[in-house]
Length: 335
Ligand SMILES: Cc1ncc(C[n+]2csc(CCOP(=O)(O)OP(=O)(O)O)c2C)c(N)n1
Ligand SMILES: [Mg+2]
Image (cartoon, rainbow, N blue to C red; front, top):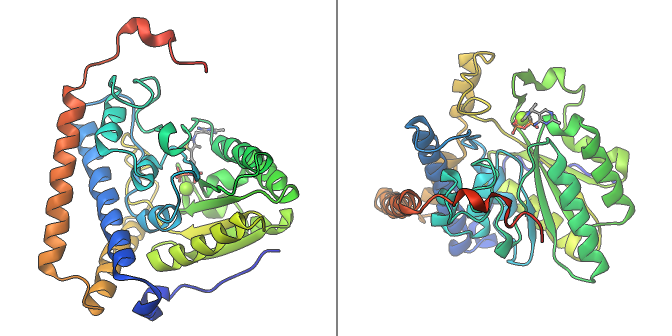
């Protein structure tokens, strides 16, 4: 049944002993990596380095990393259009992530999908569909397959607030509830679905209440609090692995930029954007780490420098990779 967990203050309250320094710094490094890769992807698009479009996840990193960080290689991820960084969190090589944006021959789908619609089969990341919420259906189908095969792998399926109004979201939850499937549905509630605000999307305050209608667990957390998300996700994943069924995890957050790189987002008030930028999950976690003597200005700079170097190498790899031959277009589309 739907449960509510008040974890809004987890960053402020959590005793360090509950988390190893390796885990805390790993979560931090991954948030920084996702932020820096995403900002780089935006710049490259604006420089005309690749075609199509890009859907930035900046501002939503705590939900993205907190939910995906503890997964095993044989666990599955079903990302949406906004979750290119879900591949990075799962461990896909950065070179290939940038080659995907560029649509090059070295990208996992050899340039067949639109740039940000990246999947990575070797680590069980499904290629997102353009159709909103479709990845939830596919992820749920994968979870059913895993159950039939007697495996204890789980599926983490990401979606946005807008996706929760679509029928497929409910069909997926209903099916997963009936069959007690091992799925964590991560709803990144960033308050907007393109130009539609949440108040015109639903009369609910907590999107995790959507779970109640399907008899499954639902939890809402402060989606800019990495430890609140990590705690809720690891608990839900552990229950799923033990056969106790699916969970809806709502992460209350905000996207800093437009819906995509071609959207100036004039429908939002500047004050709203500024207020959310002040709730940036990264400096917030930096303060926690500094308070616990795990981070200082030197180590912060070192992490950023190392990440920046890694990104430069990946961009160079993508730029030097060839485009696939035109006659390849009909190959590798069916297996
Ligand atoms: C079925 C369907 N309807 C409309 C669209 C166009 N569309 C793409 S993303 C999007 C908004 C999705 O909003 P949300 O689920 O909140 O995710 P967010 O973009 O905020 O991450 C829409 C309407 C689509 N791709 N598929
Ligand atoms: Mg949204």
